[in-house]
Length: 467
Ligand code: ARG
Image (cartoon, rainbow, N blue to C red; front, side):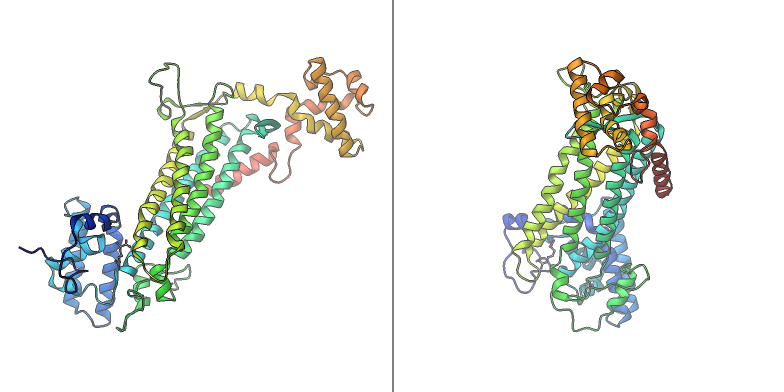
């Protein structure tokens, strides 16, 4: 017996595709995760079709009920997906039509070209909100760790060389700032995801009097003032994947930030730094070396950044040669997009959990932060306060550092006579420069790691992140 053609081939085609072709062209294996949004979109579409008189009330109700039942079965894992029906859109429509005769009217004035754009937009809108939630969680974990260790100082580094002392909280809040910019970018991207393409047809709209505004409103495609947001060019609407690229770009930068945080965690957890202790549950052992406790979560966070960046490049490459409008190439967007969303979300969540279970080693931090060389710039500032041009002060402190090195003493152990042998400007009050507490109290510019400023910044973030 001849198998029934999938809806997209019936009528026009005389032969079925062979199995190999079907397997090569299918997307059901990955786009089935759009089922929820596909059903929502179809419900809005038929509600509108009824409103404009294309469907009777009865037909509309039957379709909505049928879709609802299919949704429940999918959720329960009982729905039978058919690879020969290619994608999520045709699987659901075909099954609906099998059950409900009016289902044959569902696709009136609609194309899969706009449907797939609609589904991905609806799905991505939700994903962005979920990702933003995870990012806020990570920000909270960073702020909490800073608050719990509010008086811990560490060296700040440039070139991975000790530079100047900072509060640990200052270092952690640097990531909170980066993550906040990620949130801004994601929200900005959300505004362009949140545009309704339905009514674009396959390429050129429809001859039927569709109510695009109603569909947009039903699906929440509205701006902050409740004004519906509709795509304004049907050709652009069916081929546009800019919103997916934007999301992948924002997520790639987020992943880069997470990777940098991971790198700091990995360094800090090493015996050489020993600034932190990761909880056992967030580390793994070695199969060979019994003493090992490895920071695998951080390492994988760093490693997974590669695929998130790769996904962005893959999407851009996918789009660059496409003539207008929809081309089947676009089907390749989804796995990259899904992978980015899943990876970004999981990595953010795991990094937050790991930090929530991280202990600071105040002793090791204090030893490192008390390196008097970190205050060499403060020593130059001391000379500047006495009226010396900074360039000269820098030169003199350079000589002082060389003298300390030569005599094998830390900077703060040089006698006044030794200091004065380099330059007479040094006075008895120079001792105060090496008082770390005082040094930190002095750095109170906005954005600097001063004692008061850090307390203020922690408070600011605590308030902003209250949710
Ligand atoms: N599975 C397709 C995709 O993901 C859906 C749209 C197919 N449209 C078409 N004209 N073949 O892009």
